[in-house]
Length: 335
Image (cartoon, rainbow, N blue to C red):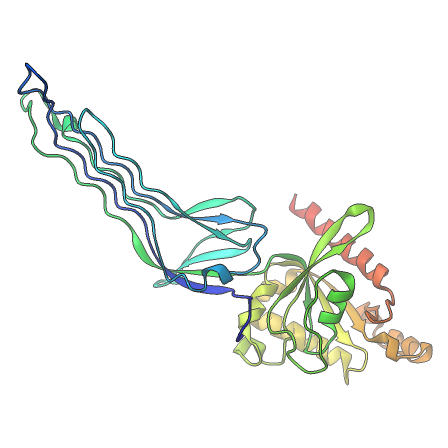
């Protein structure tokens, strides 16, 4: 993760604004040396808020912000003047950001829509001026209410990538190559394990100007749910994908066994992942001749895989059609 621009976890100390104190002022004017109370209320302290921004895809801009403080409210003035409210501190975050309490680990809320704004810490209320405490028997109260204290604490912001399709497979399964061919994304591609160290997102164009988002998740290995390889740090990104596309290379020693290991890792991490729609594709099929592909199709008939090659462009349109139908079906179920 060194020198990476993808940051999916930050811990920040937030403090909202304190409410301004109320005023204990008395009205004074020529010919009216002992006017009644006219102290104004204190201003409200600023909130700490999170706002979704669809143009952001990482928490990199918050990496070095360890303290965020909202502005305090101003004290009340004379002539019933209310103090100015403190300025809200609005933090823009990518869609899919979860806010947690650092001490308890409790999830406070999540941001999933562009422009969605939620209060992380509410600013303190302004104190009441002395005019509120005037009664029939106490005409000149000399006291006012102090402003409400601010709220503060360490909070965790954690990003789970939002995408329509998540690519799942072992390292070197061809995930990055497929993403680079089907979208304008330019992930790092090389012939060694764990070339992809961070999730990459790409917009895949479909027919009639439609499109969907595809996420290249770093490769999974056996024992990933226990933290092996890149571990559960990136398994969490699979949770937010509507559809899972399993990629297994044609030169795998045992395709069925590899698929079973992938399913077991997802189940061990979060059993609900197995309830997601999934598509299986055998990659690097340009390395096989027709006879070998025919034998493999018979052997894998129960899995109903698609046979593709990103390099040769083999069956990529069929893959897009299959993915789109699954995505469309999923959206209809949700609506």
